[in-house]
Length: 102
Image (cartoon, rainbow, N blue to C red; front, side, top):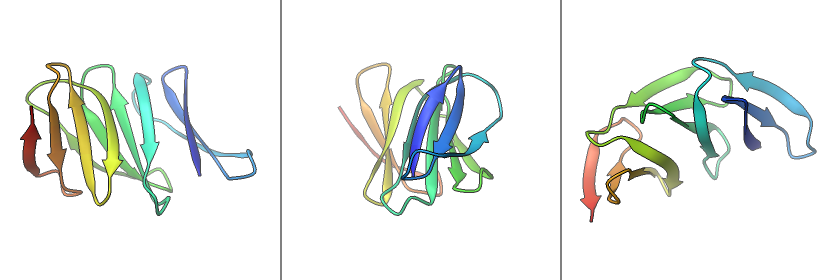
C-alpha cells in the first residue's frame, strides 16, 4: 500500500499503483504514513493533530499532542510524533504517550 497526500486529502494506492480509496475528513493533511503490515494509516494535519485510520478508511483515534505535530511516522508498533518544538513524542496505538525524546 502506498499513501500520498494530494490537495490535503490522502490517496491510497495498491502496490501496482492503482488508486483504491481516498481518505476523506478535513482536507488539511500535510503528511501520511502506513505501517509495515499495511493495515494502518497515520495522517498528520495542518492543525497539528495526528489521526490513525485503518486500511478501509475508518478513523480509529486522534492524537492531540500538547505541542503541535509537524509529522508522524510508525516506529515499530508505536507512533513517533515529531513536534514543532523539535522533540519527538512516542505514543502507543491506543494514543497513550509513552515517552518524549528531547
